[in-house]
Image (cartoon, rainbow over all chains, first blue to last red; front, side, top):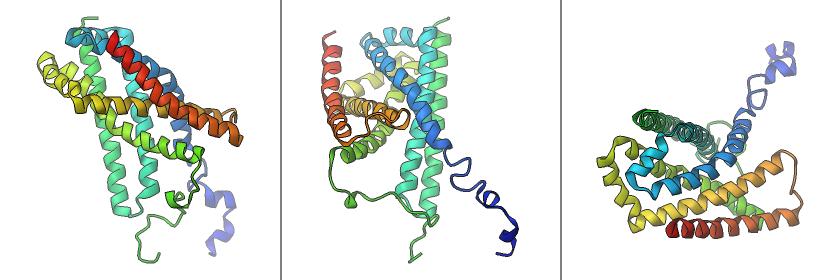
Length: 131
Length: 132
């Protein structure tokens, strides 16, 4: 207590809770949402028309530069958005420290691994198309 | 803290049981629920893309899974979840940004609209995809 006498309230709050960094996830959740509001309609329309054309049609579609760019952007925004969403749910409902930490780490690992795999898959299709 | 190993003493979100049922509250719960459902549904979409990149043989193994009846049911439910989360998410952006649609009547009407949009939109997209 004696120590805190010499600290300003701002100094005590900084780095904890909502001081500067607490809104980061909230803002990123909304920024990725704005990106997805444009990317998801494209993705649904695009994927439905591509998937009806069998393997060759779908591979050709994913290999086109614009589709490859938009696919990786969609995956990036979606996985980031998913990660924050799942993190918030875990933080809300899992009270036990051990379980909570394990699930938070699992969430990060799963989403990042999936993003890297999807991005590499799109890259392979794009390079395979010889663009 | 009375026997529980809480990570920190901050309050948790209000539990389902203490809310009175109304449209906006149900839409909020559905938003979270569809978000969780899509989290796992997206694994299936990612698998489709990974199978595509793995080549025709792997893709030929994966395609019947999607085309099967359980696969089609999951895909349809995923579509309903995406459309609901999409419409309700845009409503949240209007709430957070320009503060539009906050009065109870509008908020309830938009909630009902989002459910209708999710179901009817999915049926429309599905029908278009099948017939084209």
